[in-house]
Length: 222
Image (cartoon, rainbow, N blue to C red; front, side, top):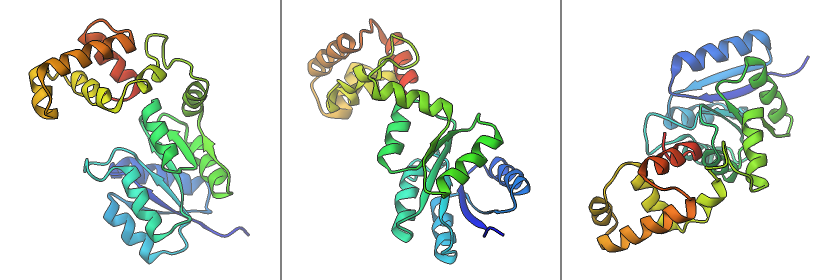
């Protein structure tokens, strides 16, 4: 008989989280879930249950300063070899790249079938990696420098922006005006206006509406 697989499930949508955990444990009695709503609860569970080897983590937690990847970093201070699956509604290059940099072993979007999540759990627990079809498609596009979603929205074009230009891009996408951005970033209005022109040129967008659409497609704006 195979031993139980103890799993920390961090998601602040308790009803959805507990429901998925219940269904999975009914399908496979090896799966033993411990539920957390925030990072602090997850840390307490890990301290008290050293046999937990895998965490399922939502990226978008209620506390903006304690997102899922920050929680994972804290969890690995308690258990360095903790394996992790991101379980999220986001399927865009920025979130996937950030997750990969954080060292996750799996990435499953919330529109996946329950069987797909079960397979990811068993695959990652066995020491392998697992990314569902939606995430894998975007990863392949990122690696091959292809465009994301449609030819107008190239993630590689966004990556060509300097860090300073990315900051201005994000604020423009949030519908901030030139004078507001200048104050927020402690820059001259002329400098911000020049950066806006450079951003438009690099991204091949012509106005604010196109820029906002671009931001939504690559995951900068939700």
